[in-house]
Amino acid sequence: MMLTIENIYIDYGEIKAVEGVSLQVQEGEIVSLLGANGAGKSTILRVVSGLHVPKEGNITFQDRDITRLAPQNIVKLGISHVPEGRQIFSGLTVRENLELGAYTYYYDRSRRDDFRQALAQVFELFPRLMERQKQLGGTLSGGEQQMLAVGRALMSLPKILLLDEPTMGLAPMLVQEILDTVRLFPERGVSALLVEQNVSAALRIADRGYVMKDGKIVLMGTSDELLSNESVKEAYLGI
Image (cartoon, rainbow, N blue to C red; front, top):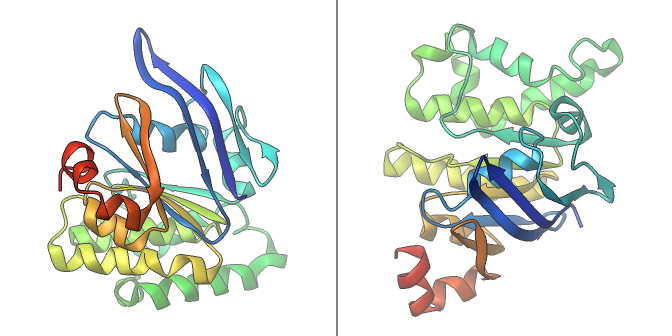
């Protein structure tokens, strides 16, 4: 098991954002976390990456408890987070953004081969980033900025990637391009926990899905099971 979330509770003041959520991601698996806005999906990703500390519950990554580990140490273990809204460094070049993604080992001379291999992998997945290495991140198109956000996360050599709405605001052609790239992650040794509003597209690339409502998991199953259940699609998935 790559990632295990057990009975997590998260409050924002008096607001109960997440209540008793448990889920798992196996090695080599893509798992979709689905639900309406405000269901608590992004909060789950933020607690896994150490940006929130849960009120109750535990998070285990490869048999290690990371519930209260600092975010920078979580990255070093092999968990990278692609946040909603891309959040690239707009005043830095594409190359500089990618170098920052490798900050955990970039200055270790014994790992220069790791950096070169990670960079080659990112450029293979996103050839446009190679073409625009010297271009400022803020001058890229929305789709290219999303590619940069994903590429920056991959530069840390993650074992699992947390993706928060990677297709938000993108044209349909770019949506498919981004999700087709995510589909390739398991064969490159990277699992994924994917939060995505485009439910149909997300389930088509995922192995399994969890559906959240009001901070709780209300449904789970294989992607085929969720896509084939008409009452589930109408009541919870909006499709």
